[in-house]
Length: 110
Length: 111
Image (cartoon, rainbow over all chains, first blue to last red; front, side):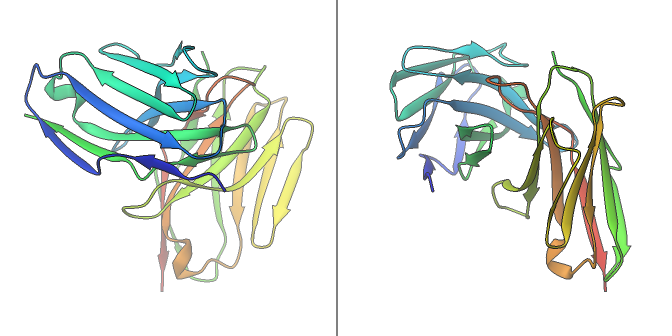
């Protein structure tokens, strides 16, 4: 099974800071995804990538960007963090037939 | 884009009874419908999935049914046990796009 590692379990950042969330996989999958999870809203897709240097907007890309310079690493970037970006961020890897999720990063913007 | 509605948001059943969670989707091109279980503080994990060319799939105590005409699918859990308590998410997708998730159902198993 693929192992999906998110570098930070908890993060606290100040409003206006640039924030990087990292996701690394160990199985050479093409597809990687970033979701945010909020109570009562489920998981919402922010961005996804099919291959190195490729990216596609999901349902809520505003305020976010991504980077995929190497196949195993997919980074989510908050260019200027705002309080409404306080959330649990989940990285997922895989294809139809099963995603594997990382443990998540709980980001608090103060 | 795809829109997935999930009901109910909370479901409480007696241990040993059955639980049913229902989802509808909007995009008739969607062809893959997984269900994820998320226990408190843990990551979502795939428990069962179904593709659009199949009407029903079963795995021990859990089953999923799909009605393509009506654009709805359901999760059925029989003989519920305490370890079934969790939040369950349905999702829909058309390859190769990402999954669109429902808002989740908090399933509570009463002893």
